[in-house]
Image (tube, rainbow, N blue to C red; front, side, top):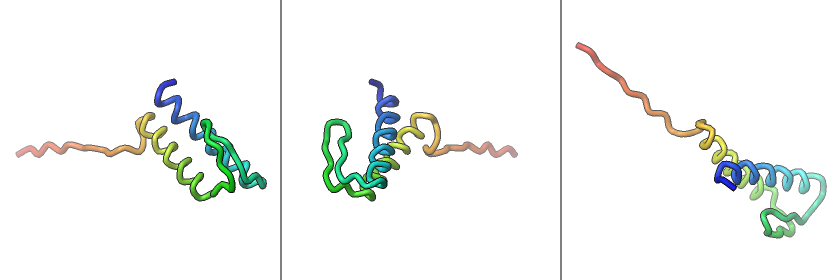
Length: 72
């Protein structure tokens, strides 16, 4: 699995975890780790982290460098 595929997979998993918590689940498993009494805030932060990684892989969200040429 490439890093891009992993980032997309993790976004999907964290969205599923958020939905599970919002519908009443208090335990969830992501990438082999089991979370009990899951903290929605922590899961949301991690989803946002992975979304930023996906955006970086897709060429969005990074720093933009512009050059200016001054002519006399």
